[in-house]
Length: 289
Image 1 (cartoon, one colour):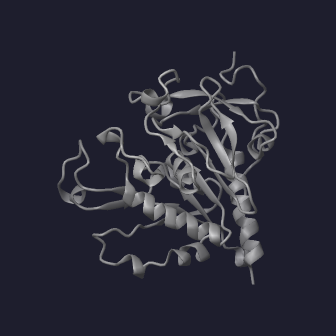
Image 2: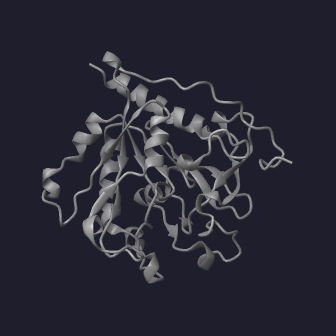
Image 3: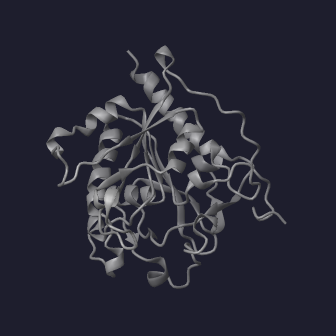
């Protein structure tokens, strides 16, 4: 039996083609930076590891590039930067770029949604929270599409008024395992698409799919104005969301950039990417002089 639960799978994606604007320029998609600070356990603090690093995972860049768009990492400004926050106008990025992808990474800090960490390991990254919240605000104000991956889903939910489970195993002990450190992105479970949602519309012949699962935190209280588009049928954990309104704001709890092309048992994330890039193209066209 197929790992998609015996349901009919989505039709193969048609060949991707570039979405270009005036002058033939490809879409420019901003990607929020992952942040490394010296002192991370398990990493020797010498050479480059003694510096603050802002980085873009190759797999995320390749996922954006697979849609024939250009990936542009947007650096953060921290207290140790040679420039100050006042020198960096994120509105300039939002005006120049056509969309924003939020990478996965460290936990969202509980203080960001009004709680104290239940365990030191779950303190999260408040610096990155503030930086990404400012980014999201700028792109949403300029009507540019935003797509969140894993942490990105959680931060979008928090930014717009929701809360998180700091640790699924602790706060929902009857839930299935959503992370396995020994298998990482090869840890999978089923998701169920919500009938009538935009995500279900993108997959008209699919009701269930198999996705990777690499998170120990999850949405507890859904933010006002957001709709659930997919969940884990084993325990009801929210796996995909979309914000209502005129602008594209959507996110998934899994990592589409880890999808193995051609794997028949893996959720085909290409329609989601095309939908996001189509929104970016439509926004660019609407703002064209």
